Each structure stands twice: as C-alpha cells, then as structure tokens.
Image 1 (cartoon, helix red, strand yellow):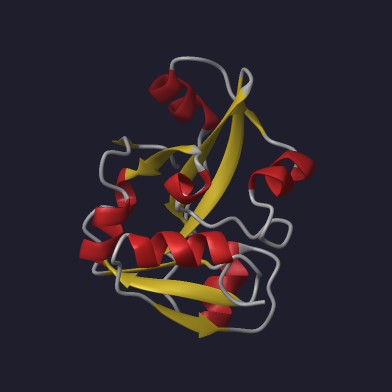
Image 2 (cartoon, rainbow, N blue to C red):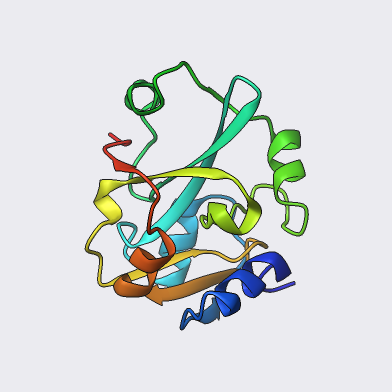
Length: 154
C-alpha cells in the first residue's frame, strides 16, 4: 500500500520535504522503531481519544505511554480511548491501527507531546504498518504549527 493518499496529498500541498522508508510488518510502534532502526524518541505515534462526540489525536514518541490524566488536564474534560472501529472510520485510507500523526490531513483535532519538540528527525506511520514517513525536525514543526503542545506522556 505505501503512504496513504490523504497523507501524501497533504504533505505535498504543504510543500513538505519527506521520504518514505519500508520495513517489515509490525503490530506496534515499539516494534516499528526496532525493525526500522529508528530511535523510539524520534518515532511519533498517534493515539485517538474520544471527547464527548469529538475525536482528538494525541501525538507522542513511541518510547512513551499516553497519560490520560495529563491529556484530560489539557483538554479540560474526561477522554476515553477510541475503539478500533472509530479509528478506522477516521482514517479510511489506512490499514486498521496504522494511524498517521498528521491530524490536520484528516481534519482531526490534535495535541502533541512536548518531547517531540526540537527533534532533529521525526518518523511516523504512513498508513499501512509497513512504511514510515521521515521528515526533519523543522518540517515536523511546520506540520505541527498551531497545534497545542503539552506534556502528555509518562
């Protein structure tokens, strides 16, 4: 499959320089970092949470776990993890569970963990559990411009 069309079009329309690397199929971000030889702190993963009738994409390093209490403080309301079915609905051109971290491409509100700030390189899921999109830190910051940054992980 490669990079999801929605993601590719968004990156191209945003004039983002990126490359795509392939890896063996994985089931989680920690495995992806290992098989791709990418530092887990530089691999951004997305976690979809539900807030009332809305969804929020929490973006954090693969080396970290989302702290729901910290996210609640940022949003100001309780949140729950979205179901796999809900996530698939939000990312129709992606394989189940292969969540790209660029929420604006999919019109999803987002919040970014501060630990991704100032990374020289950032990698993220391309939409199929077999490829990563790679951008430099400046390009990632450009993609995350205007999105709140907070301490989301433990």
